[in-house]
Amino acid sequence: MKVYFIDEIVRSALLTCGKPLHYYMEFLHYGLKGLKEINYDSPIRVKSTRATVNDANEIILPSDYVDFIKVGYENGQHVIPLFEKDSFNRMMRLDADGNQIAYAPVEIDTDQMYADSYYYSSHGNDKGEHIGKHYGHRASYNGAFMVIPERSVIMVDPSVKTKTIVIDYITTGIGLEANSRTTLPAYAAEAVERYILWRYMEHSQITPMNQKQLAKEEWIHSFKRYRSREYQLSINDVLRSLRSHTFAAIKS
Image (cartoon, rainbow, N blue to C red; front, side):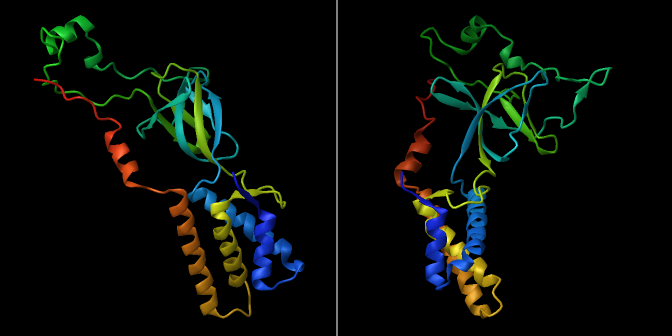
């Protein structure tokens, strides 16, 4: 994969402005800052880690965590996603000695209390086909999680039996290396350079206001171009999404 070093982008911005190397550190500062800002909205690099669920059904967030992209558990080569739910109790449950303990599982859904023999005899015909008219189901809490930022943890539902959770998340690690070896993908190169030029002109005392505004608009347009190149959407993607969970209809 083609990548550019931030050093190349900074030197290109210096040439564009006709500035000497005396401005290198200032431009490098803007470049690293722009790279972090772009990464927050359009992740350039996604960091993945395996985290262990503790006895309180919680996961300690990594120190460089900003926001999650996907939370799930491994099933062979695939990661089965968990879904976010905001109804978890944010407070810790404590025992008589003040130690944190896990919450008890939520009430059992009555739909899950019947044996398979009863289910198939009640909702199937003599050919083993589902006869439909299966109403009254409700959403369950199973397979859910909630991020609690004030405690830097992810709370996982007790129904999730696995003790190892995979987290794909946006990290603050990009751009923290204050050196010229930081890399970025080719699509983001123009956006970072335009960000450098905009921030330089923004702090310049001799640049007219209309040029500052023009530099900002050029940065916004370059960022939009980066997103359009990175997140392309075709008609086949739409059809694949619509058909991904389409199955044969239930016969009645």
